[in-house]
Length: 252
Ligand code: 13P
Image (cartoon, rainbow, N blue to C red; front, side, top):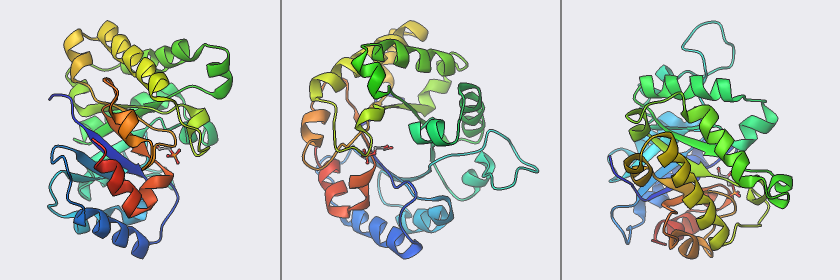
């Protein structure tokens, strides 16, 4: 599997069922200016089935989940397993989003199990990581990101990596309106690729897609996507507005 261009929308805890369906209907109408761009939406759990049905066979358009359990099945009240997601035609899952790490105390050990379960059930993973503001200010952002990648991805093989996409999401830029500059994004993405080359191989590094997330919007997407090592975006707020999300998709 080679490097893909991807625009993914993480809806977080937003939308009602009707709003979710309307949003995908509007996105489906978009004529991609670049037909190779893969679109993925991550609705809240209860809407995945309907969203997947609405997307149906739209070209290069997929449904994902914002999380999955580290457990396979059983007495885990409130959890959603990878098997359940597979059974409703969910093709992707986000693992390691900073909001899950911060508000739900998810650890690297749990993230490894979540990724294992997803891959075992043929669900592609978007693995998220990124530094806090104080780490960026203290210039430890590269070592922070390297640690996040090493501690989780070292549990996987180069073949597993074919079904893993990376998403660099600097925490200081998430939902803040503050965006990494194209240079800051490119520097980090090149560093991430180098880290993957060290962990696996140059081939693996060249083949993996690395998305940028953190206040990516209709105005700045073009500049960010023009960076050599930025293969697309994981969009929060701007993915809730069909027009903005479509402008982002058409920013390649
Ligand atoms: P915003 O685009 O709202 O900053 O969110 C980014 C994000 O967390 C995507 O997962």
